[in-house]
Image (cartoon, rainbow, N blue to C red; front, side, top):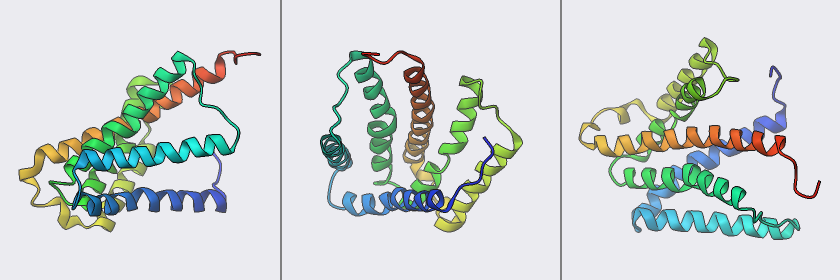
Length: 189
């Protein structure tokens, strides 16, 4: 798809970046007082509560079909529980800036996984260069000095990389289940 993003889409992208990037700062603050899994439970519970309220306010109902519930469970595991747990654990060992840099490898993992597990998203030089420039930008903004001195925290750094892999896997899985949802007949139709 070749199209230009409009101003509204750019604004939403900036807002998403601030929210996502700010999560590292706020989790560092929370981790100063709470255990990592307590922070994960609080974050996921708060988000789930907000989503239930949105469903209720919009008059929608949560699907009850077992196949959809399994898909949502897998997506929640890959996109929330696993990466949040790994990142919050890691942030007790490494600076949040380094965690942000390592988490910024998610698009790189996504294009590599897409190359192996999909047919419609081939790896191109343009995609690869774009992802590498993006990672370089995160390093430049967060601070290149954070990359040094982390040799003793290899396990924590690996945890963030596993979280980035989980995020990338969740994106591909979500795309797959969205495609299967649109191609399957709707109940009652």
